Image 1 (cartoon, rainbow, N blue to C red):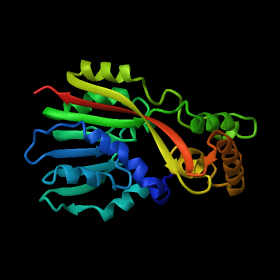
Image 2: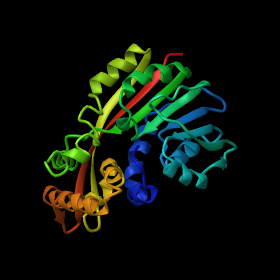
Image 3: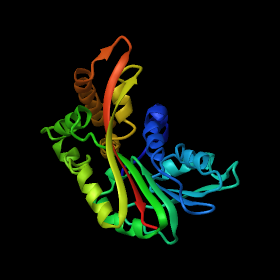
Image 4: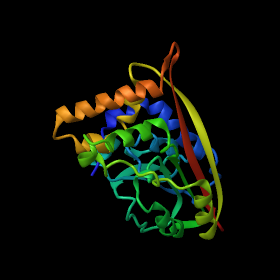
Length: 267
């Protein structure tokens, strides 16, 4: 199981939070009074608080399978200023089955880590109250240099034995049409789109710093027992990233495409 580092992940918190804000901007009113909301794959919980800002009276539960991430959520748990509540619980999206109705189920940059997540949509949509919404966004850039170079390096003779099977697969995210079709067949009115952000990052080797918090985590976990090998792999990867993402006087640009879906269940 991948080990996560909340502090590393949060180093680019502003850039990572923007897609969640953009996703919620397309979610219309939810039916419950007060609403019941689930945040599936909530991570350290910092963006789960955005749900409480949007729906102040809601009872919101953030779910995650990482002990490291869940430990950070204690900073946000408790009553909210609007009279609602925010709590967190351990759950794995690969087999999470809702035990109560929800007015909104959201997932922010998590489903790409869940093999077969498309087949989980049926259970989640079934758990929505009439008129409820299932909304998610995922990175849609597995073909971008930061991932392609990582996979290519991991497939070389030196690293294949230890890293050949640990990184995200190229089919970890489906095409927009696949998601639209599945959600429509489940009785939802889906809105699916893509956005490419042009993140301007500061600091030394900022793309490496970014990916250390996300896509590189499986490799770092696999090499955790061998610091010398871990550092060697990271150094080789860093050099490749420097060529792929050159630095300008204003910073380093990281183009990052994401896929969004907002699916409203029929009333």
